[in-house]
Length: 79
Image (cartoon, rainbow, N blue to C red; front, side, top):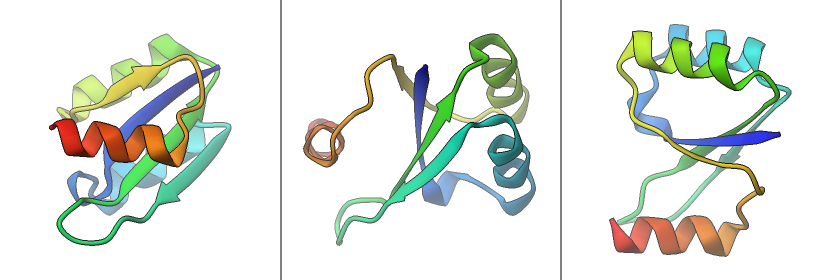
C-alpha cells in the first residue's frame, strides 16, 4: 500500500472526487491553526494515482507506511 498526503486546501472538489474513486481509503486529518488539514489517500495502484496527481498539478508526499497523526504534525512543523 501507498499513502499519499496532500493539503486539503489544495484540492478542488472535482479532482478530490476523482482521487477518492482511485483510493482504497480516504482520511482527513484535521489540525488547528496555523496548520493545514491533510488528506491521506491509501492507494494500491501507485502509477495511476501519481499520473492523476501530476495531471492536476497537485503537490503531494508519498510513503509506504501509514503515517501516524504525530508523523503528520511533525511534517507540518518542519515545512
